[in-house]
Length: 560
View (cartoon, rainbow, N blue to C red):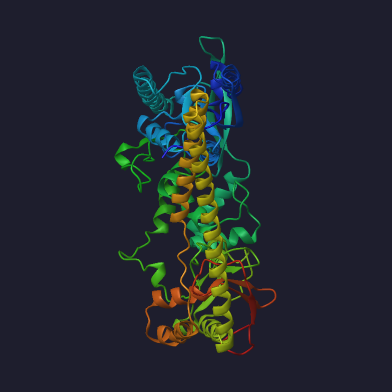
């Protein structure tokens, strides 16, 4: 239901966007857009309370996130004063007609209208509706036509060779590991502006390093991806982005098309941006060009390295994380990591070596980045789970349960009292407004100025309508908290033994998360800290947190 705006002065938010820095040359730069929006606002007595812009963000592709646009949408919906969302033209808001309609409908529910200041038609009229529909259709068709034109040029560009170097031009984007982008000037266009093209050349640091990884580590020494990760991290090698090497990074290097890129091949039209859940198109659709840039390894070496990687066999029915026998891996009820390493911030993961009797918890960062990433300290699985369950029993003694019930009951009473007080306040205001209307009607009946009092009566009715909406909204948020008794809670805690002995892995994991919010492992201090929920029944009430330190016991359960 739309909000009723009661102030004469209108308030707005302003948004600007460019998808390409070169649009500045076409007169639609961000400063130009904002200047036009401000001018329109000044002429129409509109105050702009917030301005945001996205630079280099497309409004046509669904996979592009516009963070400032999303922020401005939420800001406009939250602020009851805002009634206008100002843009330079329809294309700056959204270039897809269906998505634009959905976004505008969401704003209209909060009483907010989207205005294109270069074509400020009134969408509440028939002519305005037609113009709005025409603008949205034009925006989408223009973007589609531009996209097809660009794709066609990119397809030809990847096979076009530079007359000076003989290498093929690139279509933008970041160069893969082993190469770097260089920008060359090749003539001028019809307007006299210089034409710049992009080429790849071998990177001074990562070129030789990539050759060593392929030829020495993989082909000569037959090292696994994990062994390569540990070797590189031990040498202090960082990725081209400056991050530690991880298994996924090495796996990407040894993808077949990546290896062939290293051998001088160029690829285009590989990624599928339309089908969700599908990263690549069929190989028959790929555009492949040989000798497109300097090669680091030969094609034969690339294919041999790929062959040595083999193909990982994946289970058709992978085990669900919720059914995992590892009680402390995964997330808690708040969506946070349940068991974390304080040394590096990584998640504690399962570590199996030497059979089921040697199961350990270990920092998961080591698995993906090697032993150099974190301290390789392991915690015995059975010992730790036994200790944590013991701590749960100790925490919930009969005396502790009675105290907990009292605190929960007091909190429920306080929240219910606040709701009742707020409801009474709204009802009181409504009664006062109704009394004012009766007095105004009586004044009209006695011969006072009818027009003056009619406006006042309408204003009071609007205010009553607003209060009724608040009353309905508050009724929906009425606390539905149920008091618990000590017997019920004690039975709940005592069922722990039965759940752990006979329950499924899922039930055991969820039961423990009912009591514990988070566990932290400090490998240097040999300590595990348990952060409890304040209330084990209402698990989202986490304001009151306590913690107990569980120190490793030397010689007990394989502790360190």
